Length: 87
Image (spheres, rainbow, N blue to C red):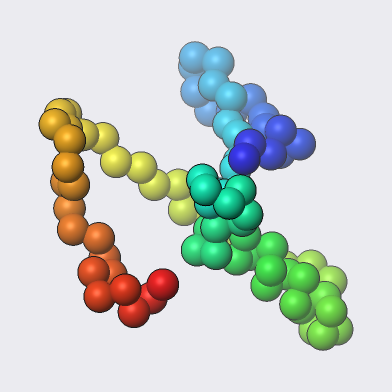
């Protein structure tokens, strides 16, 4: 789900580029996806605040993506956890 309150025009590109942060939701339930790094960071911050550990936390994002030349259906790679032990 896009967080438009955090959208900004990236000043480092010559072509106007809008950067938007998003929260990942489960497509079936609409609930926050438990493995979403942004959701995990929000939960960690809430825990630290509730426990009186800290009022603020600073996290550094790692922007990552994949480019595929051609995908003809099916999986490109096997899932990381094929045993289901992490779910």
